[in-house]
Length: 375
Image 1 (cartoon, rainbow, N blue to C red):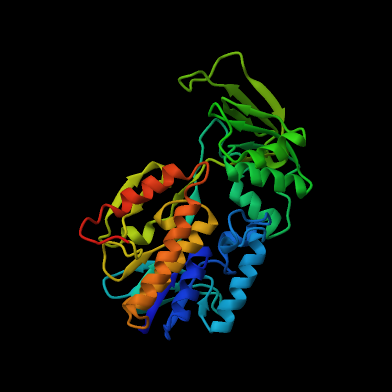
Image 2 (cartoon, helix red, strand yellow):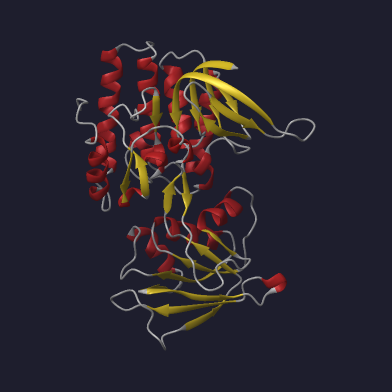
């Protein structure tokens, strides 16, 4: 049994930020684990420049922010276990599955932390239509990983389903990677993402079909791969309108239908969950300190509801500071002052064109704790 003061699960934006803040706050014995082969999560997919203020590193690309954070984590001496999946969360310990042993096997290591921060991120939603399991149909995030991390084109001619920020940004990045984006398809009456991203797509001559969805994908390509994509117009009740079908030649379909929190570990404990649509589904309620209803277990990032990377970074900082404070390493006055600053920045992030609804939703989550005083 390995004992540690703080275990952070997930080395994406929230987990990295949490570990860095906790270490800066004085925590000596800290372990950060991630199931991937490289820490940083979504940051290394994001080759676009961040929005926001100077405090949110506006104008800096996600990959550069990720590199800066990894360097800071190294300087602080943070112990990071990669290729390690947390597969069990018990009352007094957590089971970590370490892959890639010298003999090719895996082994279970039990870690007994005093405090836990769960920053397990989000996962992509799927959309079901005729042919949705055809080779060449994938999540937009998977395509983004291929081009920005692995430097591999997912295909040559691509249809993107979904025009939120992910759909728009990934479409443009696919074009930068040399792929042809044939069309963007959106079921809603209007584009869901920022106009600045949609404008780039439109100026490049890519058609965007609102009030449409994919009716069928045909797999007559090599090895049964996607060969054609049939889209159809929707009426006001979201029903397909017969006779409005359009067919595109394509070898890849990417789905940008939103994300939902990864809450497997959360569900292994008696942590209160509430359903919140704007945040992607079932999410854990938490205090101002990001502490869940299970004392000593904190949550941060997309685990608490899917938002932007900047929000995940800020929530990670909150959780890290709170953990350091609860372990006795930070004075209450110092910790509270830092958390007040972070909450002010979060309020600003959630007041953008699409942020007000999320700000209200986040307040509802926190209000589930009437016994906790709010700042």
